[in-house]
Length: 126
Image (cartoon, rainbow, N blue to C red; front, side, top):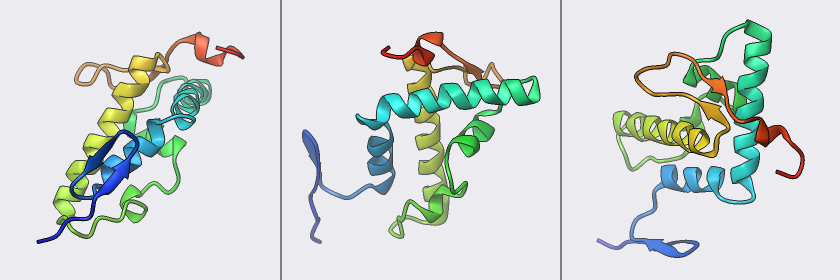
């Protein structure tokens, strides 16, 4: 069985992982800070429009098109159930990443809605 090497920045993967590639594309610079800013703005705008925060799924749907990520992340090597599990892991990781950057506030298992995070993200030049 042969493997194609995937070269992603400073490391190589033995097998291609489209979900990891999507995650890296979303959080690597120059996309990292702009998507964090987008998460902050989407959460803030949702609160302004609905008087409550979005669920994590609603936030991600407000941020990205299309809503069915499996139409964009092509991974025919895995069964559909495994693809959905990998997709959920990717979405959870994005939420955690944006929380760590201060863009949003959300505690999995405790919060039902996402809150906008630090105002520092909305300041020019920050």
